[in-house]
Amino acid sequence: MEFADPEAARVYADLVARIASDAEITFDEAEAFFLARLDEWDNTAVDDEALRC
Image 1 (cartoon, rainbow, N blue to C red):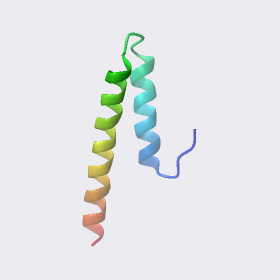
Image 2: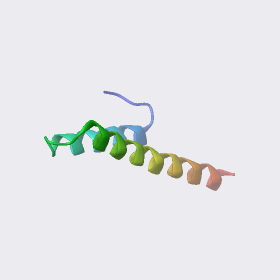
Image 3: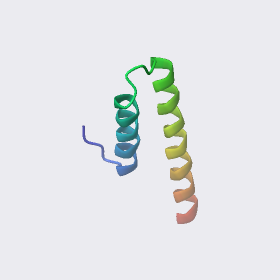
Image 4: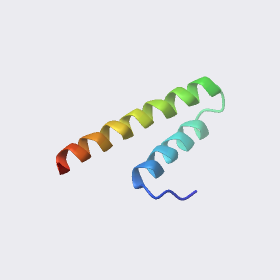
């Protein structure tokens, strides 16, 4: 899967690695992990934008 944003690619790779390492992970756990990573990504993007202004 290709992403225009390198950070989006890292979020996706983290999710794939998390799911691959735990065969017993539930959908809810995977979703919570993914949403937490998206929040981190969003916070990073906001911080980066603030630095540019």
